Amino acid sequence: MITSITDQIRFQTADLPPKAESIRTEVRDFLELELSKISPVKRSHSWEAYDPDFSAKLGEKGFIGMTLPTKYGGHGKTFLERYVVVEECLVAGAPTAFHWVADRQSGQLLVKYGTEEQKKEIIPKITAGKACFAIGMSEPNSGSDLASLRCKAEKTSNGWLINGTKIWTSNAHRADYMIALFRTDPDLNKKHGGLSQFLIDLKAANGITPRPIKNLAGGENFNEVSFVDVEIPEESLIGPEGNGWKQCTEELALERSGPERYLSCFYLLRKLIANLKKDCDPSVKARLGKQIASAITLRNMSLSIAAQLEDGQSPTLPASIVKDLGCQFEQELPGLAQELCELEPTMEGIGNEYQQVLGNLIQVAPSFSLRGGTPEIMRGIIAKGIGIR
Image 1 (cartoon, helix red, strand yellow):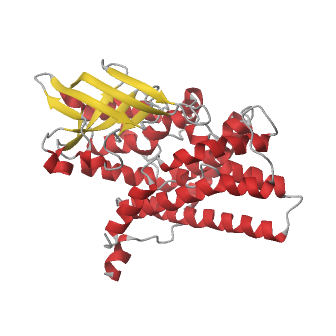
Image 2 (tube, helix red, strand yellow):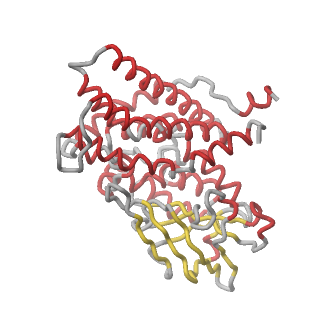
Image 3 (cartoon, one colour):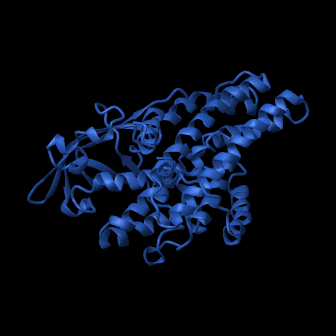
């Protein structure tokens, strides 16, 4: 049993190669210039901040679609080179929401399972930072049991007819495309085997209604999306019919393991350290040191998964561990920052910069549990993976 667990949970040391590190200075210079006029509180929104113009500029610099094939307009770089760009954007608080999903997972999925026409038409848009994607997985009545979803896609003479509702779908009200999981076999006993993925053009299809869900800070990133008799072409199917669960699982390995799983609040940590620099007793330094050590550990784990992805592996179980531990780290940080600095959090436009950044992240951090799967689901996957469930 121990050997089996060790084989499944591997976090071997992975160092960034010189060609990856060489990109860092270029990215920092670009971000310093482009973000110079963006306020700290806006930066604290990080990868949930939506700015199509910034994404287009990032694409023009060659920093989007880095791991996608040059044949389709990508740059043929490694996952570790992309890691540096993502890391720098998060630490700087860059507004990356417009291109985030497309760059992280949708492009990869289309390259592996999409049709040649889909690749030629859409991948160049992704690499240019001009295509916004949403992920259609969760449903209102399925809880966290994704495999029990009931949104259905039925074959017609012209393609597919889809009906149902998705929820917690980030940026669906703004996105150009959605890659969504639907039940193509009505037999619920088949569960995993009856699911398929579809590429949906949200601008072209009729019968799609996104309803933004407002969070505590007033933001509207999550959505509930209804599909009522939506007709989509036959070629909207991604990969073989019934292969959706396998594809979705591979996609989640990309979604759950990146630096965004521990750096969403990092801009606050930087502000906290700056505020405490002149007056910091040993006990406070010790607590800050523990937090920084946790961040370093999570980075090493995340880098290890990036190296595994580069080797063509699909490290779903280790990615779930990074997601769970990273979420705990991120959600604890705002409370720690308030305690150590003894400043009250405020709403945007009230108080100093630190208070506004703190106030924003205290409000939005609870939602981090929803992104990529709840802690309960992550721990269930981990327990099953190591054989104790």
